[in-house]
Image (cartoon, rainbow, N blue to C red; front, side, top):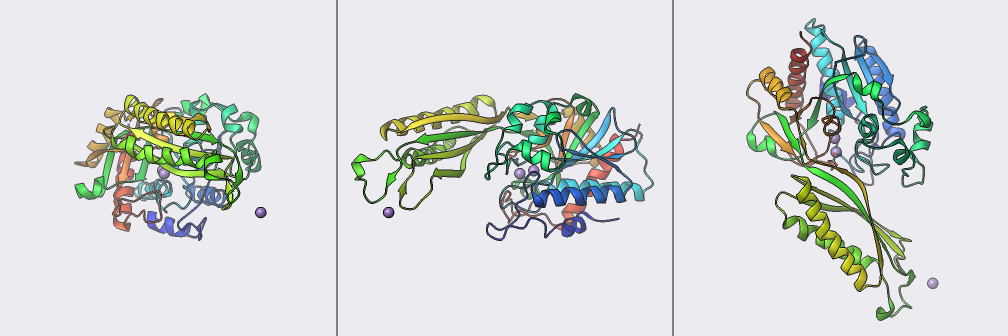
Length: 401
Ligand code: HGY
Ligand code: MN
Ligand code: MN
Ligand code: MN
């Protein structure tokens, strides 16, 4: 029997990022590949049969593969400079829950699989939940294969380097059809459970959310030799976009808008940029409000680009409507766990992508800092164990006929 904390400790040195702090583990990069191998060995040592699907998602089977399998899992990749728990906690908890069930002599009455999804954060290729989107067809193979990382390597290059065949990437009906129900355990990414004074909760919904790239084009020139009145500087409308994101999201109830990444080209201190890419992450409780926020920001950015004589092209890189998790499966979780709170989340998850196709539920583990996507993300060992106990109970209930 290994605890979730012991398993997290075993991987604590993989993918640390001294310059950013925290972890940088991205889809099919060296640290993530090391973690995938580690998971494969851990699953193998528990007698689970491991396979990798066409899109690089890992499945570890307890018993023969599907149909109507009960599947649990999460992801091992992180955002740049992320915390130790977002993703890995769900993966290690699935392994620890198998230990708990095996120690009790439990045998599932239906196929049971642990899953590790590929590139959930989009930290390398920009598109979140890439493994689950490809599996379900929410993203096409063509779109995915052409995505580029910051070094210019494509997703096709990355899957090839990981030993997969790019020609087989894409919607995988056969693999998807094996999932009867899906449960993802995840560290909570806000203060919901802290405020409710509960170690574990179940998810009700995920905000509608998406990512948009704003490309402003101006005129590259010399910082000293170009008079202020003769400039077409794309950093000006880019700045207006950032300010508008705060203003627009503050004016639409329940919405959030963030600019966390900006890339001026060529990026020299003494160079007026020739173009700037700015990525907007916008979220709200429903489609209408999310679209309203993005429209307000876009209108402000367009006006600012015109004022500076700059061009602007806006590209929607990903979008997903709000997710409301299956209420009957949630009732099953609550029946297995007793009186646990149910709460919404502003974060996206592979569970949210799968929810369109199969009954899906999530378990959250309390995060005392309320911080996520940053090194301060945390979960106490006792709460991680409560999460494992809860997951084991849920798996036992759902896998007993
Ligand atoms: O960005 C998100 O919400 C997620 O953690 N991928
Ligand atoms: Mn995340
Ligand atoms: Mn996550
Ligand atoms: Mn010079």
